[in-house]
Image (cartoon, rainbow, N blue to C red; front, side, top):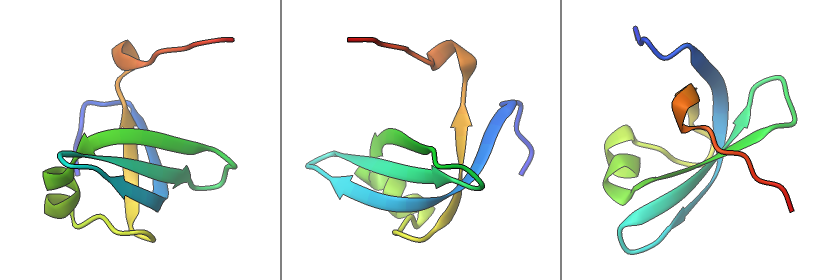
Length: 70
């Protein structure tokens, strides 16, 4: 896999919650206590063959990162 995205984090799918059209996928990043959450289409989950326990990569485009505080 060759990508221009520099922020590539290997991990494991720990949960998938599906709705009518979208799914929330949580990925535990390897070697950390961090979990990344991504909203993707249900079709993407099926096309990628994602299941709990699947190895995957979290790709983060820096221009899409948002932060919030209470």
